[in-house]
Length: 356
Image (tube, rainbow, N blue to C red; front, side):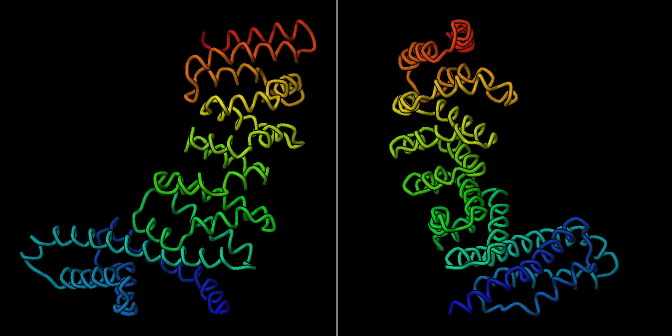
């Protein structure tokens, strides 16, 4: 059974390649409105080989049959009748070609999603093939919402399979990172349907534990998409401290992204999340990073003030909570400063950098 599934997965790229060419042929008909092009011939040939008994292909078969009829009419009509009806027939040809393109895309979606589902559940998948399938699927859902594609994803429980791979520490990081990008793409595809699975599942834990540049990028993207509810989950699951620890990474890119994540949490986080960050010594750590800005470029210039601004303009805190946090930040700045001059500079940045 596994061998048969493996063979089907291996065939998928070739099938999809052929279908992509046929989809382009349908698109070409819409552009050129011709009834005797190679694109027409390719689609008419497709009509002779697809299985009309397959319920998934019945609509495509009907559209191809209509195309064949229109082409025959256009190629064999003459005289005044042809002159009068040709514009209408050409328009109909374009509309049928658009329908064919849509049905072929649905066929491609079925092939790729089934192959991806099988590969995700394979205990020893081919890494390159899986990354290629994940990339193709990410590109597809990034094109925008499609009801049939969503139904297919839900039917195959694809999100759960993605989370299983994301959480598997034995899985290569390249695969896990690409899986994280696919999860973020699905949230953008339809947040209302998939956000609950992120909030209830292991996605956040997996992304933070991975601690890579890509995983933190995905986490930032998810916070921007899901906002305060996701920050609530991050805080309640005790992941704030692990995010703050990423500011100590030896990888400068990861430090910068961890700071971006902190800023997102500051903007969307409620009181408990902000309190957790301050308790973990965030202000003190930002003071260290701000001192190191000469060696880091300008990534951490005025980073304490930038964090304070996020709290001020963000949507997670009530107004009285915003007012209460500012004195605490200023106190921590003064305690963490190495000199009065440094304290005065950072305090001024916090006071003038954020709105009163």
